[in-house]
Image 1: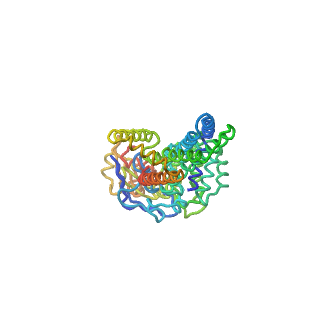
Image 2 (image 1 turned 90 degrees about the vertical axis):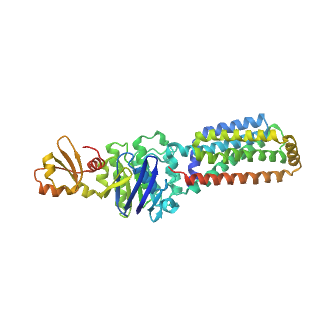
Image 3 (image 1 turned 180 degrees about the horizontal axis):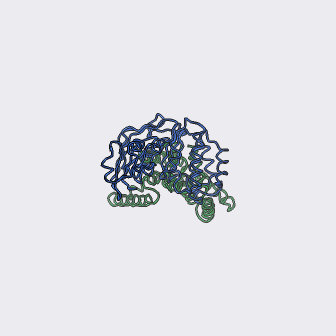
Length: 282
Length: 216
């Protein structure tokens, strides 16, 4: 669905250089620290910025050449952008009706009522949660084949985050050929929804794995100096010196559990992955 | 493109009270001053109101999202010119209706020459306040574009002043007035439309180039 080959974008003090492939029917997560290059990647996919080198193919079309037909199959929710805050939902309905031939107006109105989104208030009077829900709803109600969601749960409370994630899950259940690319700072959101995760750091993809494998196979070994020296280190992806010895991230948790029964192995999650692989300390 | 027109129309309706106030001012001006002035005045306000949708598009990174909707960048620019010119023309027509109404009430006869005068005053205003600022606003944003426009006007003034100093401006203007006097009013309007259409086309091409190269 999306293929990025030798994709490069240079800004003063920052360079993005990534390759990735997002197949049809998957929910893929893009994680990384602030300024890692997630939003630039999203903008390159949407053709909002042009690559300096390489190319990015979205639904068999170069991202810079996405036309009306391709965009009709694209559902987009951006973190800090949307319809004008001076418009109301009622006005947006009229715009969406003319934008997308497959716009499901009745369902949109129903969902607005369900999510308590007033039709006649301008968006500037909406709360952060209401705006986020509306952004996602707009992306979901025209039968898009590809959803691009940049931080759809940012600034939301637990309940609202759950509602937004349920909306995305339900959308995928309706048609399994649909594809979603989602970025988020909240790793638990991605753990619960994504099939696979790309970790991006300093403009490069430094890790890619299925979420199940991250959750089941990855772990953190917490060992003292002596144990660390005796360990087979070939399966350690990253080691950080700590006050008690070493904290080691591995993709082969079972190997260490079986061969070093005495050591402490904590289950891995996406937060650990980000912290360990991007040089943070846990 | 119809979705973009719908969006701009909805944004324009956000300023319903401003529209109403402008019409009232237009009525007062027509009653008190010349008809060609109020024609140009309302056309200018129409253009400025329509242009304000560009500022709305720039607020809160809205334009970034707009380009993810099913429209091309080229269509966005074409729509903007259609909208700004369309709304200015509607404002010009409202002015004509006000002028006719005011003429009937005040018992002032309105002849063809008056209409030609009104149209001749509306068209350049439409291009100057509608078409020319669009590429500036797309390139520099609503705030900076005003400064750039002022700087441009200043440059034009300096060039004109220098030209007047160097050339024998008196005889140039005299011959221009004589030529315009001898011209058929209809040919004059056609000539004006052609010149302004060329200017608008240039402005639109510049806008397309700016938007095609714009990154978000």
